[in-house]
Length: 404
Image (cartoon, rainbow, N blue to C red; front, side, top):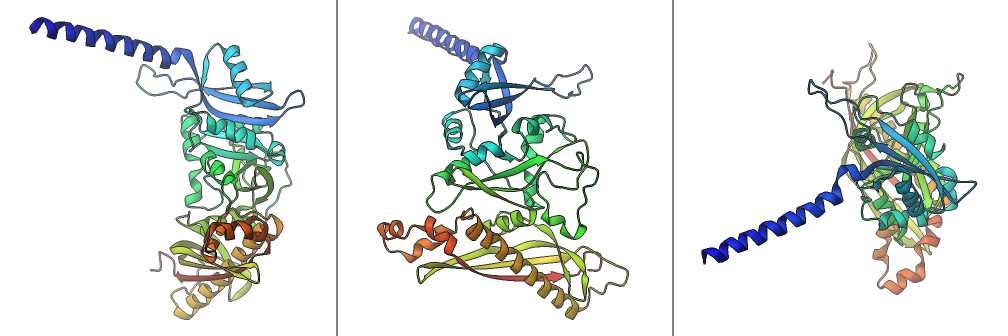
């Protein structure tokens, strides 16, 4: 019995050594090249121009502090993404690994033509994570990648992880992923969308001016920001099926997030009810989720949306009297009117101008039909452009934090 146990233990050890030896060879860092971002442009000589951004493992100094890990950018013209990966494998003598790819950028020119083939190819690769962000760049996708340099993060990978999170407290950008894009491509009642990216224009032109009262109208490639970081994300790229059909600016992107219930708080400048030429900055947080209901009236969708917010006044002057209940009520009414107009303009733009239901309002219309054949016969995709919207906003604005 003891002899049998000894042989059994020896066999187990041999099997474990074989298993670990093969797995070590498979994931050995010496054999792979870690891709942190991809950029895909159109090409004159071939179908695509694919750019890969690699990073070297961060080095550790004698003092124990971690130094910045430099990134490397290589570009290849190829007939497809798969072919580009294969050629790059041969060029660098390593196997590309996409499991840490944080960002995929498509140029605006390519997105207008349609990107379904590229999306399906990437999703079919089991190394590409559904949480990978997708950006549509108004400049060359390669230029966007080359100008994406972290200034507050030590590593480019960390920068790509956190840079899309500002949507939660500004509403000017959206955390759009390749997973949600793919799902929307296969959805009968919604349309895809992506982050709108570009290069800030202040570094390119000296005469760029933005009206401070229209800060919320900015979008990528057209912002008043200047600094070391030239790439920027602001607004939303709107798709019809797999083709880019338009773009939204910052305030329209905010409207998208509020309707989608995907924002924690945001700052808006609303007209001062006591002075037509002045604006009041108010920080709003959703009091409850947006409620959406859809009725079919004479064949056209009638959409009712209820929004609810609580707010704090941010902008102050020496003679501000924001403890007065009547004044706060007038400010709340001004805020309601401003947001109702803003949200309505956004919704009619997506329906009448772009004919793209990126908020998935069609899902709320299903209750009007008893069977699936009835839904299919109605064809929501063809009727969204005929929608009418009834928007109601209730906001309770309180005085600033200091006064409270």
